[in-house]
Structure formats: C-alpha cells, structure tokens
Amino acid sequence: MGNESDLDAIDREILFHLRQDGRLTNVELAKRVGLTPPPCLRRVRRLEDIGVIAGYRAVLDPESVGRGLEVLVDVEVYANDRKTIEEFEETVTSYDEVIEFRRMFGRPDYFIRVAVADHAAYEAFLTGKLSGLPGLLRITSHLTMRKIKLDS
Image 1 (cartoon, rainbow, N blue to C red):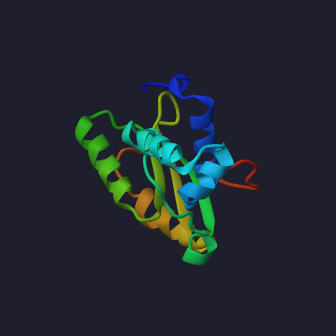
Image 2: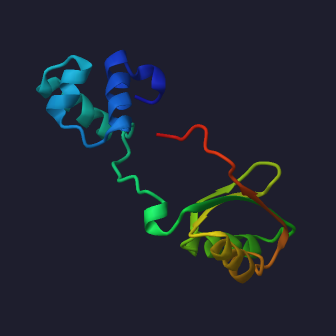
Image 3: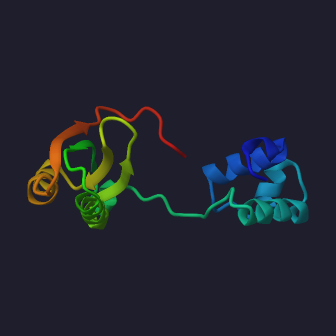
C-alpha cells in the first residue's frame, strides 16, 4: 500500500476514529466501523505494519505544561556554506522550546514553531538563543490571534 488510493472505506473509517481517539478499544472501534473485533484488529495491525499508522501519542494541554504561548517564526539566512547551515539546524533542533522545525523551498528559508510559557519567555528565547546564531538575515515572529483548524 503505497498511497491513499489503496485504502478502502473501512480503512479510512478506522483511521478517522483512531485520529479522534487513539485509545479506543478494538471492540469499540470494531462496533463503530461495522466489523467484528478480529477483522478490525487485523486491519489496524496491517495499517500499522505498512506505516499508515505511524504511532500513538498523548495530546497535552499546552497551558498545563507551561507552553501556553505558541509563536510561528520565519527565518531567512544569508549563509550559503554547508557547515554554517548544518550547525544552525543542529542548534535549533536542540532547543526544547522548538516543537516544529522545517526547511522550506523559497522564502522563508525556515519555519519554526516555538512553544513557551508567555511573552517574556519568548523574548528570552528570541534574544538569548535564536537571534544570536550565525548566518541569520531576518527573523519574523507571528503570534496567533485564534486557532481555527487544528490537525487532529
């Protein structure tokens, strides 16, 4: 199964329900998708084995773990040498505040999601860690007004 078209309607229904609640029992999942438990479990195992289901995780409340402020950061670099770029990527990856880090095509060069307790913590992160890195041309911070759709 190399692509989404290889998934049938029952597979998609299983994935829908597991995305809503990854802790569903097999019996409850089977009931929701209209199967008996043994074939439902076989389908879930197959989806895991082929990598469609990559894992299970707990979704944490950011406020309760001291990460109530999320900032989206665009970074542009002027450095072209591989060593500076690799060091930049390794350093940013090591920061606990960074919850997502992507190298982009075009501009900006990088997209970073940062989660911290509050504005003061973000300012400390920005001035004490990120802005001091070599090779940076521009850092643009975006604060969310309201979350409209979340990946679930």
